[in-house]
Image (cartoon, rainbow, N blue to C red; front, side, top):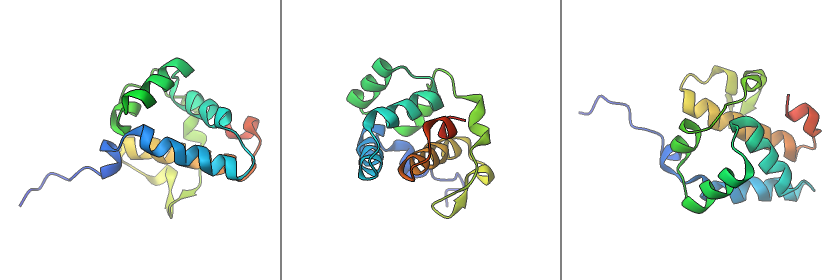
Length: 119
């Protein structure tokens, strides 16, 4: 039996396939695509042009985070539960980054001010 741990399928999922769900979640709560993009740029250091290219190229999540220009050092201040898991307790680095993004989008959808979201 293969002892190597199988990667979670989210790693090979294209960022572009999940991105519309982030935007929809925000827009349902009167927030905007621009705010979603701002959160993504804050977290990863990508600029808007790079983000647009990632969406066009259907870059997968693992590559999206691995090639991020500058992960925001303040992201470690993101605390709380996403999908029943406490983000600060996630040991696998890429999964933690994905959950940080999920948590930020959740905060946006809950009406939190951008200044508070972007710690």
